[in-house]
Image (cartoon, rainbow, N blue to C red; front, side):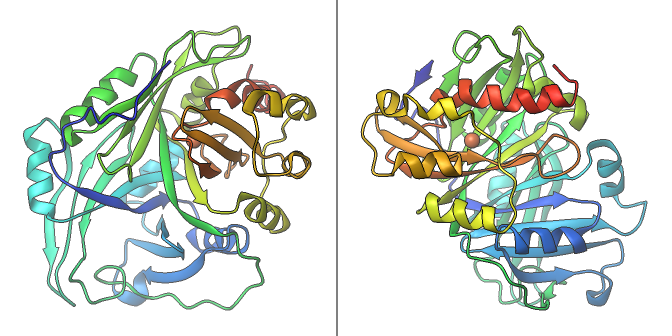
Length: 371
Ligand code: FE2
């Protein structure tokens, strides 16, 4: 394993933060209800036939600094229809907030990016600029500059107003990292793509030997922007005794794509208690995980009994520790899931939890007959 907090990238332009994640889904209207009632998102904006958009609908939901966009095609000719037929519900767009869309797009293209859509600026309600490039699978990165935009969300959107529902606050704050699963032997290809196109630096790397237990194995690299706001781990399958969980993902997703979204909280115990109360289904962790936890991670502020009760995992690196927990897949295909994470100094991703996690994931994988 390799880990460094030294900046080893070469920043070509500033990416301010994750702007939003856009999901292509089969029925946005109903999925919006799920993310409101379980994760505590609030309605924000909408486009569809009522706003002059006749090919698809998009619902924007907000939770503090997190924006999720759920898009459903309402015409078979919309590209999202093909996307859904192949992949099922999942993340289409990991969008970034930038200062100058034209410059960022041209800069990426010069260094070998694959274009998805050229820069376009709408002047209705002030300037709104967007361009996009392709990444692994059928995933894209949009670049957005709406710093002087006066409208709601984007052109053709209106405020989304829905009946109130009862839910407890999940205390979720912002997107910490977004993980992609790529095909066998493609991890380094995409690492180079991010290093070259974005100038990102690699700050964590695990090879075969690091994350292969008696269970299924994976390789992983983590890329980041200079300001640490963007962290993008990329996994590929590795050979193990059993089928890699990454390979199972690739089979069900019919290709590479986003595996999980990690969301940051300042208070994971309250977050998880409330999310469970709202009906979010998390992975079960074997009770034995907690037996020698304090020996593995040393002193922590939280009550281990409480962590065990809520199935929260803990891991430590040289910078501090982190607490994390993973949901079960959020759709019928065992593809995308969400991680809730609280960082207490740690810059890692829970490497030490892989063994405990694998046992739990593989129990579920076994129940589906995919080991
Ligand atoms: Fe993660």
